[in-house]
Length: 311
Picture 1 (cartoon, rainbow, N blue to C red):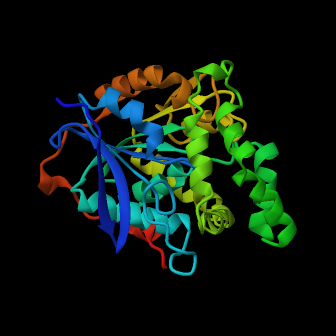
Picture 2: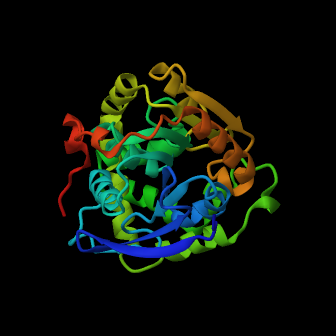
Picture 3: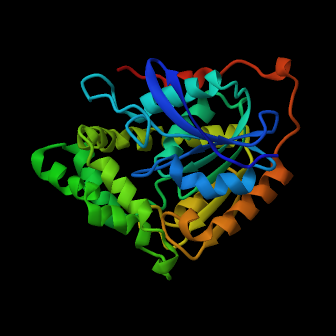
């Protein structure tokens, strides 16, 4: 097996979606969905470690990384719309069944796809990606909640702070006992991406839409209860954005969920990639169901509206 990562672009609804891919096309698929303010680059080391067993695919969301960055006039920057693009992306790549690995923003995008098409998602790994109010730490989330309720100038000024170079760096460094393990290129590249024309407006629209994720939490939790999808929560225990309570909360609906807390922060892969890769490989080897014949893959569920949007 060749573990080299390929860098490709595919058009989805007329928009360029950049993605990284490694592993055999015949291997079980693992779809990796990144968070804010990052890109598929977050998964570069994890992909190399898993490519010997899995087909690993990591797209950049619209507005992030190397994917298209349409203006807010031309594209509705909502989580439902990003989920719709990602859902169609999987179909264009022939991913009829796949496991999900989600982080941060990737979580509500992935939850929408999984809830709409439970027959397609074989297992889930959540790395600091919430589906419950537990773990939403108020020190970080209070300005977001205020902006969602009232996107006026004062509240907007507060959330704009999350787009500054210092705030981006903090997302990587907080909760990390040994910062020398961190590659500063991570926040340097994220900061450069946020400085591109139109990026601030797009990110503010997504922050304004974050309330739609909280409103959808009951539907996501119902999906967990009804599907009993195998789930691994591998979590930076010192995360000041999504606290460890968010990891433990999965067991409310998935009693067999596996929870592992790591002594690091929000971007756990930056410091604990080897351990996470080992845990993911072990989890998927034990919990992935047998691969069905193509005829066994059914149609989407009634939750399909969760991945629709306009723009």
